[in-house]
Image (cartoon, rainbow over all chains, first blue to last red):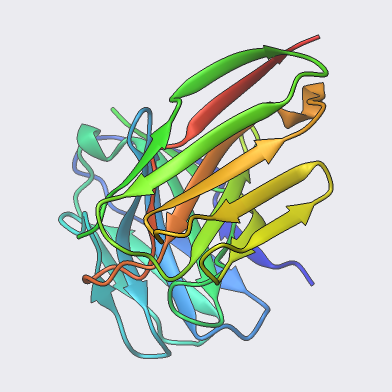
Length: 112
Length: 111
């Protein structure tokens, strides 16, 4: 089992460019999450999904969109990247909401 | 939503020393989770607590679910260099987010 995987690991964007981050899990988990981590801010939830075809907003959803077309995949999109979106992005999954989330290795995004 | 406060924010200890850190909330939690994040990696679950007063160990790590249900503690005994990292507490939020995280305790171990 690979657990939770994220693609890409690193990316540099220019302001205004768009991109999609891919998260995949092979644990048959219902719930998936996208977080961002900034120095001194801990982990902040961007969007999450409680099942295939569903999405919900987290603490910091502005500037991001998500889609969960397949149970095993959760995509995070940036339509028009801004320097404030420079961060490390983590995907996680869990079998029950709020309990024992398993994290991917992260994507380091820099927006110039 | 609920907030979790972790202390200390950072600590430097000598190898072999014991470590204590805690996490407090402004409201009651029914579950406490402790994660560790190694540099450049994603957080990894260390211990999960589900009952008030529960004391659970994982090797040299011991975590406790406070009896008030508003706090939790993590202890590391006989620290070693690979204990370096950021330790996060987390719990399910009653608001619109499934899990809320503390801002972490950064541990440095001096050999």
